[in-house]
Image 1 (cartoon, rainbow, N blue to C red):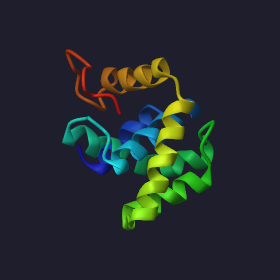
Image 2: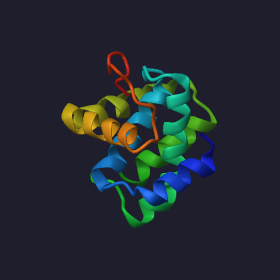
Image 3: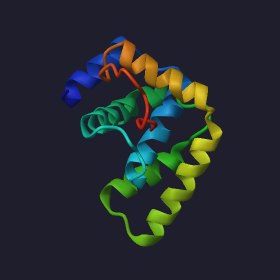
Image 4: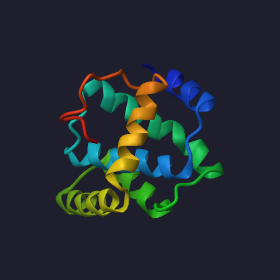
Length: 127
């Protein structure tokens, strides 16, 4: 799925503030190398995070602010050891701020509404 398709999906299915936080947490996990999603799903989640840049101005997340998004942008450009450590710390904090049922509901919505492929079992796919 191309960036334009993900952006169109997002325009048709805007995320709630808590879901924006979920997408941010998944992006942190992808950058940290701890995301167990399939490569194609990671690409779609990265495209979703990128498409959210416009929506975040209108519907920011509940928990994460500009500083965290700046960290993500820096980590996408370069990731030295100190930045990797900071990224790890922020990822752990982000994961602890979002309950497991909220993250599961977010992923289920993305699957049900066609952004991510349906999965018979969610085992091993926790973002």
